[in-house]
Length: 412
Image (tube, rainbow, N blue to C red; front, side, top):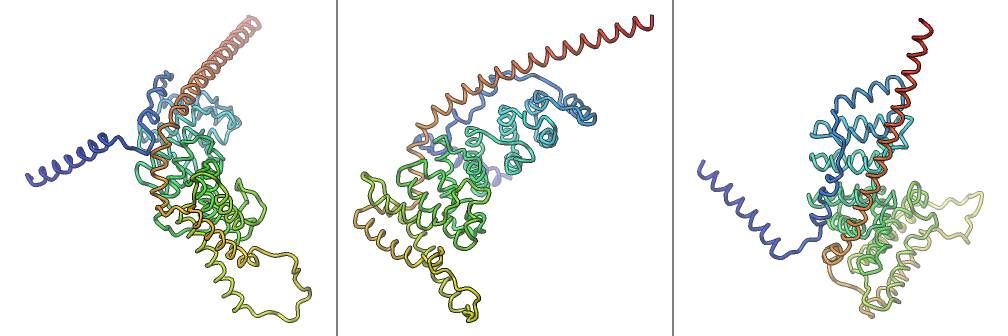
């Protein structure tokens, strides 16, 4: 017993020492407490309602095929107070999404749903409804995306963090610098573990790296663009161009390996200190060499048919035909970049981490200011809806009383 108590005390002491050490150094690369705080959100006074009463109202409306007001589902989400009630919230979000009023799920309801999930330890539920957004209507704004992404990063759950980044990419929500930085950190941290990926995962990661990297004209951003184009080039070569752009925010013009080489050429011509990380150059080199090796093996194994009905059009070159040219150009550009000192030997994860540590704090202030302004707009919009609801109820009450009076006269 005493040994157990001592062990627990030592563990607690270590934890305190780590936290104190972090406080002394003052370093952090994740979102600050001011960014993730719910003080501004809680300052907005929500209506207090009983969940059972709200559930009964919605059930009655759905049974009678009457549309449920967006205010009712918003009140339900606002009044969730436990993990068990999160499951009920998921059910009624689904029901609302499949109702005539599905287009009127309010932005503050989506934000409140994600906050409730994080508050009661249901980040998995938040992610599930996000990935199944068509079924639940969960299309968060950039600020809400950042809160959820930050939670998974802090828990070192990079697999789920990548799922969030994929949803950000699909919704093209890389407008905020903080979202870009968190996404790039999660992507490179995940890829540093050399995970086994399906072609769909390579496509999603490639598109995420590309779209987030395009917003950053620096070593991390340019290296991310190169990495993204490389992954997309691999998918284009193995699965065809249609597999790359179908249901993706990407162009349908072939040549993703060529675009990767264009990034290398662009960096070689850029003034200043912008470079490419050696890790990403090695990834492109490996992809090209592997693709050429596979192509040679297929050529040796394939027997050429002598009685073809139509000879192939020699003027149209496929991506596979261009691989030797790509590799030759890659070698020339690599030599040029090295001679110009444009290749950074540092580890890509380390570069990204230091970059995020430096840039994230200064990107938070405008985000917080915009969020607080957004809260005021939401509050005004909700107040207008509540007032409109009162007016409609009063009109309905007056009509009902007039109907009763007319019936009373007719029976008298």
